[in-house]
Image 1 (cartoon, rainbow, N blue to C red):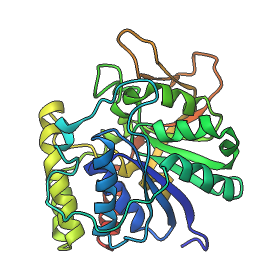
Image 2 (image 1 turned 90 degrees about the vertical axis):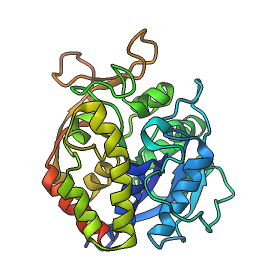
Image 3 (image 1 turned 135 degrees about the vertical axis):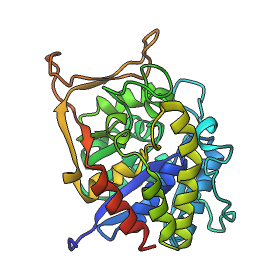
Length: 314
């Protein structure tokens, strides 16, 4: 293990796959989770703020501070995804209501204060939902941009195009104006799109491996995965469901599992049919300067080995 764990802030809208990503981070000594900021996305803010605390308590980590952030996108009404995640966002297993408190300060204030206090390049941001909190912080405090080592985000798609509209992935579609701010920020970006997550599908043996751990956490992960797998298998006609958000944390732990290209990615905010599309210049035809490492592939067996090993430690 590296002598100094990497400082991260997870920005999230849990969601079953967000929950698995949080568990993976909390199980990994290489990562120091400074805090978890929540945003409206898969479900409304009150539920994402609740769910993040449920997950911390499940992991035995009530010490991790959780902050509630923006309850709606910057310029649009909120679109949610209860049809995927169930009415609580964590349907699939009943877990007790959280006892740990929500922090008093707003997530955006926490982001700004934390980044201002840290040396340049000390903190990595890991957004797993719409980019509203991150963009609001950057708009309010442009001086934090140089402080951010990189932003590793789950969102977008190129070859897989869209999952909430024909052209757009959910996280980017919910708040394209926020995504536009982040992608124009000049901060080092790593994008984990559907192109990657759709190659990290659950299979029966992979889900049962979580259950076989025989721990409360393993049981919860199997239950969550079972729940949203039913929806995704019907939708995509696939053998399993993509575990989108844990790919972000897996990239921090073992970037060698992933391949991609450093290309230009722009966000469509005005399209008649393409709002929220991540226009990734994969073939480098635009002449625009690269602004993101856009991942395209993952070694799925290695990803699930890492995930099962770490979840088993909790």
